[in-house]
View 1: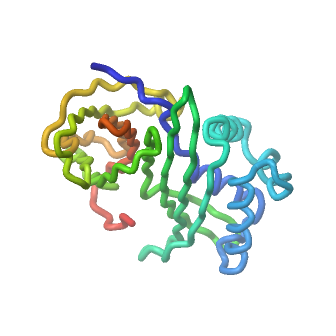
View 2: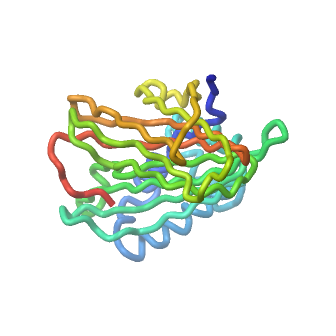
Length: 251
């Protein structure tokens, strides 16, 4: 059996945050400046029709990023964005965490989104000079179901190694019949926000358990999973960094 993942989220949180930071306030990595910008960004991203967003989103963002953001808003018009400052990393880079929650109503179905992203960046004192996404995942649920799951998927793996992608239902399933499937998304699919088709099969043991292979060259693997349950459907997207040497910088 195959399913087309409904409205899979391509995370654009970090691009929005950094593009706006660079345009609006290049010194925003300092304490008070960051807090002020953070509040302004949260209000603008959560309520783009407000006075707060005027002059912040449409002018500074690139046409491509603006288009992706507007496409996201069309699917999740009442999303709520939260930006948090995280402790600096040992290598001196600063880090922020972005959280987003939203709901969508489509064909008499309700979908609930929860997504997170952690970004490390370096500043030369007056502007951000580079960035790296350390953590990125999204969970999309149908029917506002309360099914609790645990994502046991690493943020970082070594090239050429095998690792586990496990998604577990936290509560006993009882007599519930569940099914699921997992695919790797190509860079083009991620870039173009393609909704992939996933073949699913019955799952035993209370979740989806897969052993996967990292590529032999460094980069990124993006996984898309689908789990079906009598109480609803859960779609998961997870980004995994593939590196040549362990760096110990996972948040």
